[in-house]
Image (cartoon, rainbow, N blue to C red):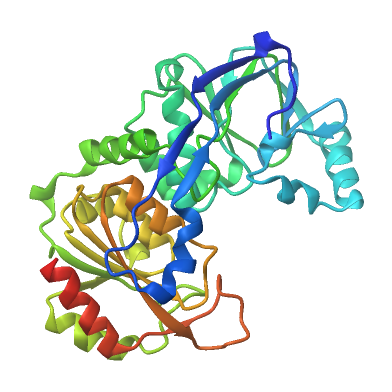
Length: 350
């Protein structure tokens, strides 16, 4: 995804390496196809790209000489999905309509077009931020204006030594004379294991004071308030969960600091696929995660790979969709209580 630039403008921050994942603890032979293609993954090197006289739009998209730069996008397909008319509208707006503000001081950008989501911010952006941690006190960190409304963004930046943070106003374009941008530390859904563990340790070290919150070490994260990927028979699940001493929480009801504190004391975490599972990032190695998954989904394995990167014991349960024709990434699930009971017993006794 990184454009071809003069050698002096690209520095290698992390070398290429091979990530090796362990299978789920409760893997079934018939489910191997859901995970086997993820057991080994080459993680490309992370590079520091330096741009000169580059524009940054209010949405955080880099552009130069009449083209949007590819590192603004999480995947090449995201850029390819832009219709020519939309590209033209973007360029006209940013070259002719929005006011231009020049930044001469060295600046940094660590986001792409997916970074506003909770998972992508924690799992993709913060590892990139760690790769330039030693220079954060002297550069201007740039963020799109929409991030200003995200509480978890502001809170998760506090553990870093950031000298200056600037949000790009919706009606302006920044023209940066000298901008650095670390490339992805891994393709989204995959991880540089060392960096992702360091992110968790940094957040827990700053917020994980268990004396201020003493929740159950068994937590179920409900997505009842989410617009998609809910459990349609959650009342049946709650009977099972209460029997085993699980506390039900909704992530949106807790500040980021509280989510870190709660998760840092959890030994057994259960949830269906969604942002709440990202909080396994704050759990201790050797603790346990059970993901409630769409029965046919072999693509969205980001929590399976995250658990492996964090040295957590990963369990799964395949669940039927409430609507069989809906895409697995958005479908609500129906969870079998009997199977859940068996999986909890297995997890607690492993």
